[in-house]
Amino acid sequence: AQTVTQSQPEMSVQEAETVTLSCTYDTSESDYYLFWYKQPPSRQMILVIRQEAYKQQNATENRFSVNFQKAAKSFSLKISDSQLGDAAMYFCAPDGFGNEKLTFGTGTRLTIIP
Amino acid sequence: DGGITQSPKYLFRKEGQNVTLSCEQNLNHDAMYWYRQDPGQGLRLIYYSQIVNDFQKGDIAEGYSVSREKKESFPLTVTSAQKNPTAFYLCASSMRPRGAYGYTFGSGTRLTVV
Image (cartoon, rainbow over all chains, first blue to last red; front, side, top):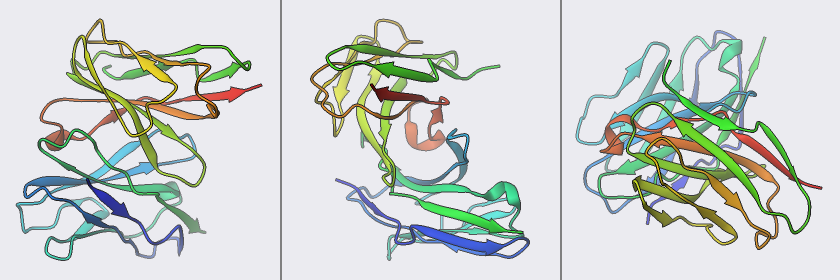
């Protein structure tokens, strides 16, 4: 069974600064994907970024990037040039072929300070 | 536009009543999922279905039931056996293999017992 740990229940960052959200996981899969989802106050879940475990290169989507350390089973999300619209809950979720469940962490609430 | 529609947005249930939450998708996705979200917790899987007329229990299936008679529809019934149904419910869908694309979520239903 997969487990996911997000050790930072809450984080805050000044607008335009950079913040990193941490995630560690444990899976028995050898080939899998990792996702970060964002849940703003509207509660709509939005896919932020995904990482393929067999790729060494870290994924990047505009201001969002990941630091993927496969051996350490760590998958952190870096948000650069933070904007007010980035305020949300962020969930880390590993997934694997043949694994019928996408497991979510408990989330990190990110506050942006103007 | 393609997407997932959940209805109603808010639902109130009296003690002892069964209620049904609707989830419809026009993305032609094979798999559909129901998650429950409680304050301070991540998403917990209730039921999932990967093909029509087939579904599996998730981690917290007790007190819930589902059906998958059509590819587009995956309704969730919260029965009177569910002792603490007040929560936010999210429906999601995905192409297979899921890992390549992640989930698309609906906007959720807030269920309150009165």
